[in-house]
Image 1 (tube, rainbow, N blue to C red):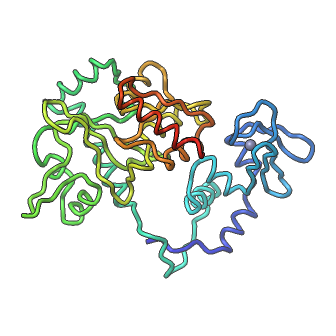
Image 2 (image 1 turned 120 degrees about the horizontal axis):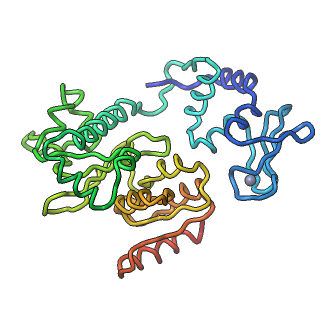
Image 3 (image 1 turned 30 degrees about the vertical axis):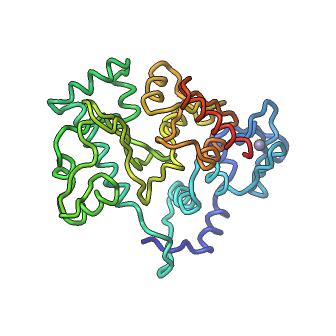
Length: 325
Ligand code: ZN
């Protein structure tokens, strides 16, 4: 469990960092007198009102009021938490972040991210290698999905059987506990455990930093439910995560607009046809948390749901949720 970052280290980091260089690596800056200028990366504009001051080590936007230090820029632009921004800045300067003992900063989720990453790698490998993956490959081909797009989205395959993943990754009690905490296995009252995702095409769900936080699975055979998501876990909250947002920002870091569509397959199929700015909620209505996250990535949202009654109701509800924001 990492301790708190001492204030003196943060002060030192900021005094050594060069905000012009840090912002300049992400946004093209032009010298204007003593300062530097750019079109603001946080709002849409044609004439630059974003300035960076090398003497004050601050940035300021006269258009939208965005303002702060190198660290706040990294938090906003790279969508990092404060400790993450400190880590990243320190690493780029070849420094190690000291931690104060005794200050707990909340639970350390790294082992959970690690097991989720291993599971994603396992599912992707099964799509390429498992003898019964042909049906999954056939389905994806039928939807026009190329190998390249499948790789961009890290699509995978959970083979039929009760405990493939459990046998592969659940080597000891610690691992089994992590698999359970990650929502990858289910445990019955009598202690029997089995894989949650079986005989499904797997859609890894990544957070804005690209870490796998959960999975969606589409059933291949008949049966129910057709779509199954990871349950809520310490790192996966359906009301906050959006499928495809990481991938959309990989294609364009500052998209002019994002399309909100109904499901993972819509996101993947659109990407296949060169429309790489689509995202989907995960079987939940659009929440204000979703919308806040999306408006941090783009100024314009377009909801694009099915034309049936359920789709129209969902679109109307999304509009109502969006208005106060
Ligand atoms: Zn601005």
